Length: 108
Image (cartoon, rainbow, N blue to C red):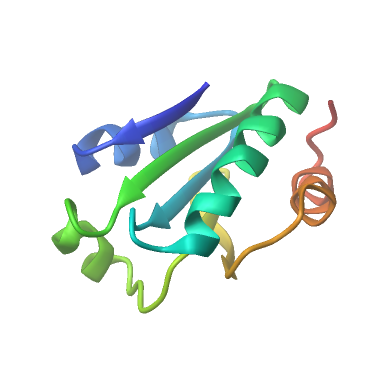
């Protein structure tokens, strides 16, 4: 399940304590590439059970976006073992995101 989050403390707690790969997608409702990325993230979530996906609306969580140095959307931050491992800026394909997930050792 893709989680829409407004409370940053929930995301921070999951990042810190999860044995899963955590993807936090910073998006905006007005952003067309963000809208196109939504269904791709749903498919990614269906494909991999050991991936936790969170979506954070930058307009509703501006402070959290600034804290994470988000300067454009969509931006996905990949967390592995509780630490930021990678940042992906822009729209990416399911294939590319699947490659990223599998790079960190998470298979479907």
